[in-house]
Amino acid sequence: MGREDGMGLLLMLFALMFLALIVVVAVAGLRFTVLELMERASGPDQVSGPRYQVPPAGAGGETQVGGYSLLAGPEDAEPPLEISEATVVCVRELVAAGREPHAVQLVQAQTGVDALRAQQIVGWIVGR
Image (cartoon, rainbow, N blue to C red; front, side, top):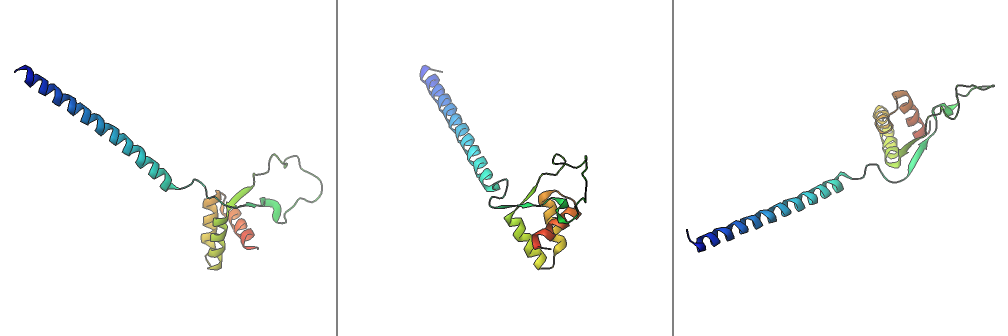
């Protein structure tokens, strides 16, 4: 094997290494592009737009008469629930279509409350 054969082999080796480097850079760039597209396609984490604050559970007429209680106070009160406008519109449409159990399930899924509280919230949304 002569010097020219060695130089040709070395040149071919450098060309293969350069090609491998280009492939690695292209794959890395493609990976970041795909991840960015997937992140955009997943949409926002929460629905944007107006949100409605649901009144507390005891605000429907069940109040304590007279005196006070050491057990109930502002620290014990549950934080106000917020429901997106899209959920409110969907609940109203479901109730209008006679599918109130589906509306209750939707409110449960969106807020994480129990079935009774979800029923109260649906009643509040539709004005009962």
